[in-house]
Length: 634
Image 1: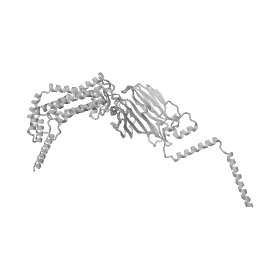
Image 2: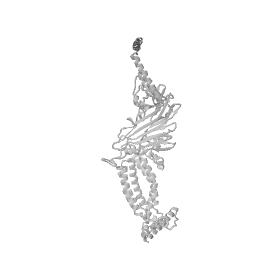
Image 3: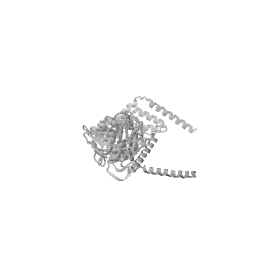
């Protein structure tokens, strides 16, 4: 009875204790404010636990984490702090989205988001359609620094707003863009603009961030830019649009011209995003850039569709920490790809212009650039081209004289050469030996006419490179050509012809006609005097084809080229025809040439090593041929 009573008492006791506990819990239940605080504490604890569990893993953030924030309460500030760490303050600061600054040559717009240039307008130039030249516009350029922080985050400057300020330093204008942790802790882009100067002093500097940066993680600068079309022919402009860089003190290299390309280069002193006649150049002032990744992507697959940009360039390289801070000095050049302008900076930037490699570039830099600069200083540009062409042809007239003299000798020897071929018609090798012997005695080797012609190649190629890159010719008119640096158009076609285009240029037509008559007059005579040798191709036929092929090549290929270059070839061939007629009719006397040949024949001729070797080879070939014929008879 007592055990049962105990059991009932126990149950009653448990019920009383449970009721008391419920009452106490009710009395001690938190207020709504306490519940909110508790939830916040729990959330912070969870975030702390996540951070602790990933202490060896960097946090990578995106631009979505950085929306423009105005006034924040403590809760929002804490949430923002948990997202971006020390740089949360930068997202709370007010400022204008765009800062505009003008100089004599620039109109620049600096973007608050990312702190770099949103627009670069060159005030003194317009494109083929009279639109101002922009090197940076409509997000075609991106400038970003990726860095790690001491709380294991990876951040990008392009995702943060910078604080702009504009001030004066003497006559110079200083634009400062600061990514602020606090008033005394920041990353600064500093731009100093000088009057009437295309070069901008540009520096990247941090202050008080040695405890914020994670110096064990590389800090990477990444500069991308699409090159905006400026010329009438985008394919022609694209041909001269190339990423060029100077490295290892004095070496100049380029990425691919008409295809995608990439390189990783050590010790880069400057890199040029060249867009034919305009360039964006980054120069390192305090030591070469290391481990630079360069890429070039061709954006013109179809010139009927891809009409806005020519190429996409990128360059990526690490910056160097010094005492936990960043302090790097650059120069930024936005301006014309003009040799005279670039040379004034004494950094070798003019080497970014494709004057030609080796001797061709040397001829341009030492002769044609100074000569044309002198002539165009007091003559209209079209007339300057004509005068320079006349001077070049006079300089090379002795070469033409040597060629015509050789042709005259071959013409005089033709009856004897024909007699040798008839005499040894059954022995081709002997005929060839006798022909070479006669030519050697008379001093009328065909090579004596070819070698002077080869001497002209460096000059012709140098001028081929000079005219398309001569900035002085840009938008300079002459006769019907509106722009000597671009094609001249006298008719627009309703369709596009492959390799030719959708227009008709007159200067290439005139040049093609002049080349045809010049080759007809010179090559025709060579065909008449050139013997066909055993085992050798028929040079007469080849020359006959060249008479028609060369003008056709000029007509098609140069239809989209600079009209200044076609003007040069037209005048050059007209002058060549005139020089040829003068030499042929008034300078070379065939009777005197014949008398000299007769004297040369009487003099003993000693064969050189090459001639001896050729004679031996021909004798061996003849013996082998005779042996083969005997074998067939058996």
